[in-house]
Image 1: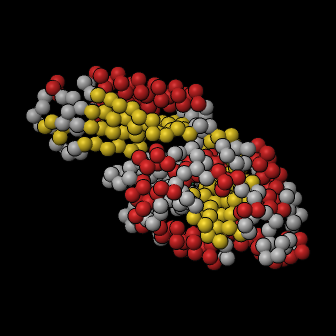
Image 2: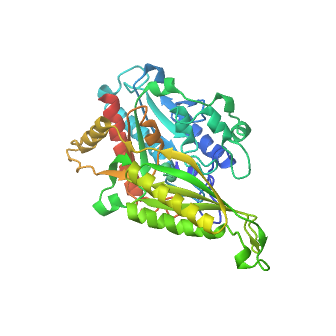
Image 3: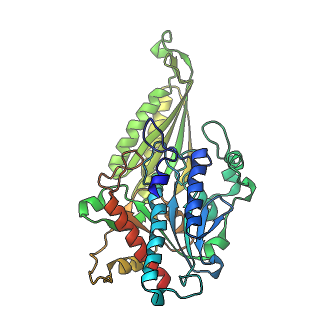
Length: 417
Ligand code: HGY
Ligand code: MN
Ligand code: MN
């Protein structure tokens, strides 16, 4: 699977991935998913929001067990964030079928369908929000956390709206919206993901279970000044928006340190973007995350105040727009405990598995979005450097195999009870 997937959307210069929603690279990833489903005799189903589902059994029976993740990427992202969860889902199904062949009496229970609960594998669309600025668009729409009207206003850096991009990719943008019937058929969603930190590396474990996701959000800061000549405009006469922007970046770092949180300006747009012109506009995007909502609010309020003070001091206008907000996620305790029980129980080979670590994360996930509607859980696979959202993101093959094996155990435990 990796051999076919790895070349798709890979940028030859950076070696990273540029798999943005509704682009050609995205279409190639979707075709890969459809081919994997077909190869396994799964029924492919693209929902009203463009998420892809591959079904074994009929989801209309209800109480389905679903696993999967996303295939899109951040700009120059790594190979594992997202795809590891999708590849592992197919690998886990293959493993379950192998186990079923070895022990047909115990596991083959219903005619042609070997599992007592429907099993789905999902590829959620536009998880990273790299193109339209909002993360988890596919799952947010499905869960009713993003309205069709708001989604229709999302626009990429070239001014192409989400509905236009969807239409160009052959998807009906008028069909998008909440899909409670679909979610009502799912009894459990488990997303496997590469860890985006070093908790497992430090604890010496290959696989862990997610406890919580930090609340987080994205804010756009527009500093508007006056374009002018870089050589002839006296410093005293300038209204240079780059200056309050720079002060704001430093303030974000200070506020995050004080609150034990994180804050990042990772994207910036400058107009007119000329070497010898004072900018008229500096637009910077703040991504901030904290362990609790109060700390996050404190950080963002502190950054905004600093931005306003510095903008005023430089004669620059400022608009701050919150583009997204994701509340804290505390994953379903019963499902979490069940995963721990399944992964901790004695295995067929008589070897008791070690205790499974439980860890929180500052990264957002479709599982977090869905957790407001259905029981969800996550498995993390060790990342030896912790690096993510970078071409250097990595997970060792043995750890990936351990992750897929753990996912197979979890799916088997859930479908057979
Ligand atoms: O940005 C995030 O936390 C995620 O990887 N979508
Ligand atoms: Mn990511
Ligand atoms: Mn991800």
